[in-house]
Amino acid sequence: MIKVCKFGGTSMADAKAILQVKSIIEADKDRKYIVVSAPGKRDKNDIKITDTLYKCYEDVKETGSCSERFALIKERFKGIVEDLKLDLDIDAILDKTEKEIISECSADFTASRGEYLSAIVMANLLGATFVDAAELIRFDSKGRLNDEYTDDIVRNRLDDVEYAVIPGFYGCDYKGKIKTFSRGGSDITGSIIARGTKADLYENWTDVSGFLVCDPRIVKNPQVIKQLTYKELRELSYMGASVLHAEAIFPVMKRCIPINIKNTFKPEDAGTMIVPSEKYTDSDSIITGIAGKKDFTVIFMEKSLMNSEVGFIRKVLSVVEHYGVCVEHVPSGVDTLSIVIESEQLKDGVLTEIVNGIRENVNPDFIHVIENISLIATVGHGMARRSGTAAKIFKALADKGINIKMIDQGSSELNIIVGVQNSDYENCIRAIYEAFILE
Ligand code: ASP
Image: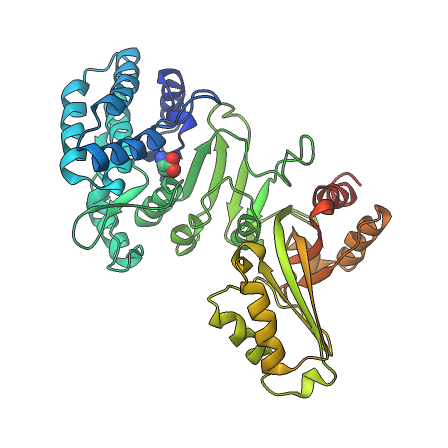
C-alpha cells in the first residue's frame, strides 16, 4: 500500500508542528512519499515564508540585493533547524540560495525556495531521500502542466526510491527554468505524485478537520463533510469552498485515487474523504454541501417565440464573447433567457455595451439588468435519488422571506443554484443549512 502525504504551511510552520508531522508519518509505514509546503503562519499576525520570498524578489528587481529581507528567511529556517537539532549545514544552503535568488532574478524561482528549503529540512529529519520537484514536474510552452510527460518522469524517477520528501508548489518549464503553480499549489504537487506513484491514497494534511458543509463564518460550527465525490468537490470549490486547491483533483482523477483531507493537529479526526464517484460512498444524505459567491449581474431578456428563432442564444452569447467576458449560467424559459455574469467583468461601461449589443443583435421585447446578486449552490448527488429537494430549498427560503431572483439546476441533478440579493446571502445559506442539516 502506498500513501502520498502533503503537509501544508501551518503543518510546517515551526519545529513543534514539524515534529508532529514526523510522528504522523512514522505512525504508518505506508506513508512513503511526502510533499511539503513552505513554512506558513505560526499565528495570525505572522508572515508566510512564500510572501516574504515574493518581497525578496521585488527587492532584487529594484536594488539587485535582498539581504535585509532574506535575513528573515534565514532566521526562520535556522531557528527550525536548531530547534530540531538537525545535523545540516543550513548556513551554507541559505547562503547559496540567496546568491541564486539574485542571479536568477525570477519571481517563480524565488517563491519556490520556501518549499525547496522546507523539503531539505524534512528529508533530513526523517532520514528520507530529497527529490527535487524540478526533476519531476514539467510545464509546456504555454505554461500548462505537461501532465502525461510529468507522470512518466515521476513514475520512472520514484520507482526505486522507497521513502522520499518532495517540495510542493513548483516544477520546471520547457526551458528548464523553475516555474510555480498558482498559490496553494503544493496540493497539486501531492496529487501529481500520488498519480505517478500509483498511490492507494492521497492524504492532504492541513489545519482543519476536512470540508465543512458550509462557511463557518456564516453558520456556527457546521458539520464536517464525511464523504465527497470528485464532482461534488468541483462544484463546491468552484463556488468558493477553499480547503483544497481547485485543480488538485485532476491528476488523481486519472487514476481514481481517493483524497483524505486530514488535520495535522487533530490526527484522530477522520476528516473528509474525497472519492471518485457515488459508487464509493455510503452516505445517504440528500445534500453534501452549500457554497456561494457574491456579486453577480443577471441580464434578463424576454422575446415572444424566442424558442423558434434559430440561433437566438448563440447570437446573445456572441455579444458577450466579443467583450471577452465569461458567462456563469444561462437559465432559460419558453420566451425568456437570463445570462449570469460576475459583476467584476462588467466594469468600465462593459455592461452597457453588452446590453446595447444584445438589443441590436436579437431585438428582445424586454431587457432588464439585475445587479448585486449572490449565487448559492446546494450540492449533492443525493438529490437525484429523491424528489422534493428543490421544493424544500424554496420553502426554506420563502419561510425566511427571501426572494429568489434566479434558479438553475444542472442536468446531472448534482446541484441547485439560486440567485438572491447580496443582502440575503448569509440568511439564504443559513436557511438551507437549517432545512437539510438541522431538520
Ligand atoms: N507556499 C505556497 C503558497 O503559500 C504554496 C503552498 O503552500 O501550497 O501559496
